[in-house]
Structures are given as C-alpha cells and as structure tokens.
Length: 311
Image (cartoon, rainbow, N blue to C red; front, side, top):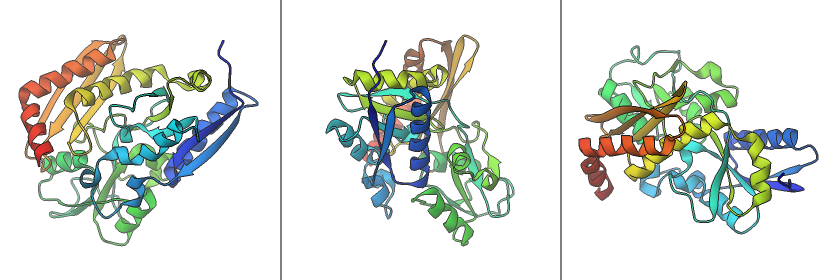
C-alpha cells in the first residue's frame, strides 16, 4: 500500500481556467485522502506573457508548462496540473504524466454574438482562433473566412468578440463548461468538421518520476478510459513529430474492447486535409497511434510536415 504524503503543492498557471482545474484536482485529492494538505502554487508562464505573437512563432504550446515543470524539478511543487492539449508529446527526463481525469466534452465550440451557426455566418466573416489546427479545418469548410490570431485567456477572447472585433471565435467546449460559460456555445463542432486537438477536454497531472508518494496519491484520480485514449492520441502526435507549428489533430474513442483513433494533418490554409482512422485492441493504444501516424506519413504527411518545419 502506497504512503500518502502530508502535503502536495500544485504548480498551476494563473488564468481563471487553469486555477479552476488546479482547485478541482486539489478537491479530488482531499476527498480521496482525508487529512492530506494540498496547496496551489500559481505561476505566470512565458506562453501567458507573450500575447502579441502566435504560439507557432514563439515556440509552441510547451511554453504554457515549462515554468511549471521547472517548479517540479527544483522541488517547489510536487504536482503540475495541465490541459492535456497544451502538453507536448515528449516530457522532460525525470517527469511523468501520473494521472488523467475523466474527459469532458472534447469538441471545439463555435461562439458567436447571436448564436449563429457555422453555415449562418456571413461571407467573409472574421473568425478568431490561435490554433493552426482549427484554422485549417474551418478554412476547408469555409474558405471565405478571414482568420485573425486570437491569444489571451477565455475572458479576453470573449471580450474581443463582444466588442465587435470578430464575428466568431472558436474555443474548447470543456473550458467554457468548466467556467460556467456553456451558454456562450453557439454550436459544438462535429469532429468530422473540426477534429479535436490531442488530449482536448482532459486534465492531466504531472509529477517527478521518482516521487513514489505523489504517484501513489494520484492513483485514485486516474481515469483508465481517458488514459487509454490520450495515450493513443499522444503516440500519434509523437510519431509525427507534431507541435503547435503543425496543424495536427487526433481523437480516440472506446467501443467495447476496441479503440478507434481518427487523425489529421493539414495545410494551414485548409487546402489539403490528410485524414485517416484505425481501430485496434483496447489495451494497445500506443501501437494504434503509431500505426495511424505511419499511414498518414506514407500518404503525404511526411513531406507536408517537413515543409512546414522548414518554413
């Protein structure tokens, strides 16, 4: 039986959504381990500080978690809580993903001032998104959209929409729901239109690989189904070598004893979408992700990703 520590400190970003997620994890830990003290260590990350450039231009989504991982490495915190869609496929040596929570709605959310659907938006509508993945897929459906970069926290993004700078924005359903903003969702985009980001809708908890007490405390929080699906999606991204600079998407679903994985690699302007889907044994998620990535690489994704990386 694992020994539970007396205190766990959680490194977290300072945004409203990140703090909600960290508080949620803290609450689950206290409930699972009565008497355990859990404290939050809010931090500002480089990804939060630099808002005038795209994530692709400044180094990718890993900038949202680097400072949190440093806090783990130097002992200021035992845990770091992340939105899994922000976590690179490869973690630093000595750190591990110890638990993932039950997945919330993984879909993308279309948010419009008057609840207009994707089809109802006027020609040339101004769409705000910071995601190359979302940009590529929505331009494939509506090449007339004028896409603008949209950075900042959820409140900042909604404010730009409400002040009339944009006609629509795309956010994650899960984030809006966690903040009590579900009423702002005009449409939940079908994954056949906008395949979600790897790990979207899942909260992950990272710790030091050698911290047996922290790992033991987190066992009670891990959702096995979410772990399987996220493992498949992350294996897909890892094999592709994908990052924020690459429009990559993957979404896994469980059906009985099988795991089905859909994957996508796209041109940023939406003129070419490489898609495929594979089904395999439930308990072999990594192999499934790698196999699907290999199929897309053979279908042309290798050249596409190499060109994007060079540019």
